[in-house]
Length: 585
Image (tube, rainbow, N blue to C red; front, top):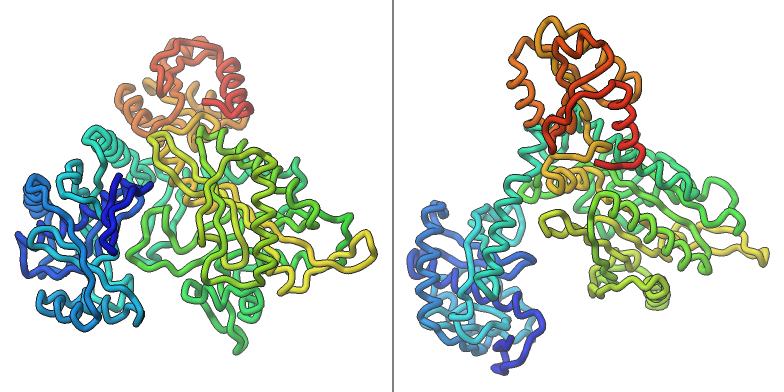
């Protein structure tokens, strides 16, 4: 795709979709200014799945307004307006925006560096402050859809005015747009916030915004995931630890978190000393490593922790289990010699691959490099980045480079998994860290008898366990495979005469380690079956007079296949236990 750059040049661009979406955000702004000229414009970038524009209008916008705006946007597209660009001096740029009563644009211009090139893009009567690039004609923005409204503080600061954010998406073809809209509808049906409530998995309370409460089914699901983690990791030589929730502020200053992360940290005072509630688990792990003398023979040392962390997220960013203020990380910190880096990363990749395949996820890998806000020498960063590159190349794992998105203490490998409806999520990560062992003076005695700093590998598979649970709820649409289902079997008695045998069957299943519930209510069997289906329970055992009289059989219904007929209770138990062992549906 060809694009118009702010210097007036027209060049081919690789990320044409992003350019198209950015231009569509301008079409959106132009349509709004035609319909509601009193609206003030803020910013309108392209984003991963579309675009948005933040606007200031008295009373905001409604869904009915979106329909009018979309119709006006279609007119602008049909007008096939040519995109033009020009630059102005700072004074002239401010004057232009003041004449247009665009207060937010004036603020943006005033905050630009003194030597910044201040560029504008024009289409028809509409002119916007923008660095570009853009497509050449509005007719190219033919496949778009406005998707939602939201509130957004100006510049993301909750002390500033709340603006209205209009979200939309755009594609190069109407076919691609239709596919995306179908996916959005499917995503709505799978929304983990709704399903989490319906399935008794989690809830939130006004007494703790952003702090999830896990209900009985949720704790069951969480514990299944944690036990699966242990099942995978303990044979690989991982040792589980637990470190305190609150630690002295001095520790976080030593680790570098205070300088780079303090705005996201909760603090308190104990014995007149400042303390921090941990936002990450790594500093606690370094204390465990330093608690005794270490030799090269002890390495690699693999310390795993289900550490509960707290991070202050802005209220406007909170979103179910996907963005919370308290969550559990399946953290592991590996202490290795430089020679062990490649083999350890290879092992971690193998574990992550195994786990994601178990849940039916595909994934791709990104190598994230040094960010602007970082610590450590250029040499350390180069060594760390090369270590990850060599490991990826040795494994033969394809990857793309994500410039400047590493952690402040080291580069990282990020795993982006793809769910059942094609959405991607960043979950697993492997981070190579030369900084923290030096800051905490962590040492081991090498084969040469001298003391050396170990290399620290930070890694997670689930990432945030809470967020991973939310992803799984949507991935499976709440229809968890048998081994993962919080309730695997519902025993349904047809009448009062069969309740005694139903209770006996329930006890048999429970004794075998199957997660079972007995529905002994005085309700019609059809109602009980429908309710169990709504709760997405994998198996229902219908217990009537025939089963009660026999005393050894159950009538089995499957969530997905319907009536499976009658079988011996022992045979059914064996089937479920095998599915548990084999991690099958």
